[in-house]
Length: 553
Image 1: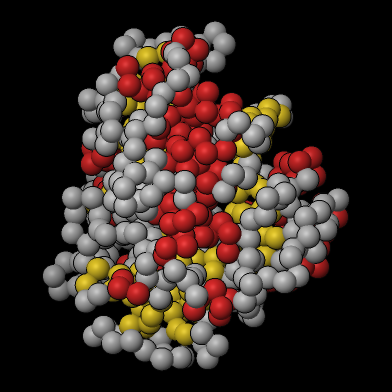
Image 2: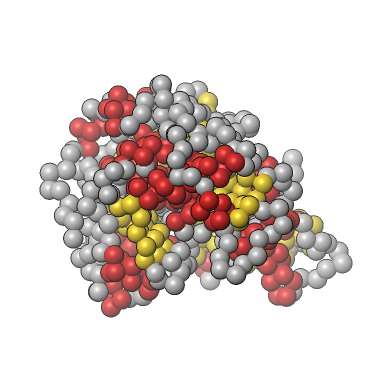
């Protein structure tokens, strides 16, 4: 087991002594003059026979790839993309499972100065079409499992498909695997500036459709800092972030972050379950694990006997996506002998508040931790005034005093959260006397279920597409396993009657149109929805009633 250093740097010192110049010096390139994400995450580590990727297939086969292997694969991918007309600044979308070709595609995209857009493999046609619509992606790379969804999407993008043995290539598609084999591995990286983009992410869509989140190359400094100070990643760690790269935490910190530090990452193609997770921890000797509280609660549900075989193996465990329950912290300590720390961030800013594995400070159960060095986090009242300890308000980033901050606004959309020198996260918190942050709740209507952030507007829009639905409101309701589940309140068209069969039909309709994680697991038929005088649905009243009902029920 990798030992945690006994002489960790003190958090207070790291925070006070932070200099953006020091972070810039850690990069191979210079954000002011020329930088390339492929070079930062792969090219700089070639020629050292250094391990970059452990990839376990769905059938359990383990393959290992060095940085030189990824350089070869990404060079071929870059040349395939160039042949398809992709150039610097163009968007390349990937809708692939966790397979080695996904890493090659991402690195190849960055190598030619293009912008990578993740598409979660559980997305349905509606979610895909919207994201491709605002990004203007020139090409989508996918596999046969997901290819059929694109037939229902209006997009001018070229499609490339990664075929398996015996699978037929759809007409007009590029055979991506064959094209890789035929392409040259030689491709000169295209240098860019720190303000140029290398990712196009998306929000969850709380008060409207998801918005594009442009990620500039200077964000690499923040990603690297999180891996060093919050994850506490060490050179001899066996690191596994189980988050899907179709979302921010997986793309930022399962691929970009560890590779940027020259440390191997881990892919498992199969679906998550507790047994396979314990198997992989034991098989690979995982020392640093990252994921969501939902995944950790599923590990707990297997019981202490299942955990016993890997007890003491994990040096550190990191948790993100939703608040970490204190009972999870206690269980991991007792049954895995592993410290599990809560981390907080957003797609728009990356991780900003953490209980740091790589810095020494007091860790209090139930606290999100302390601002990451390079960020000044404040709590604001409604008028934009900074509040002191134990005064609830909105967590915000002090823009002028947060040199690691990189988000400047949504793609071709207004960003009201940025105003008066602050970026408001929308989360209600309060500072404790020691400077740590405690969460009270969310100011918006985002639903956090099994680590996924789900915007109600998307689900409501999909429901309303069904001929039986006149109106719909969607909220998150408490669930012991998933933190929250999606519940829909539906006003039916006059010709329809509510029954369990229709409820299931509506759930499956959303699941097909939107994604496999965002459908309503409960549907209640109502005659009307609570609204403001201006006609806005008051979701908070529905949510409050559900919380009270579950308390008394």
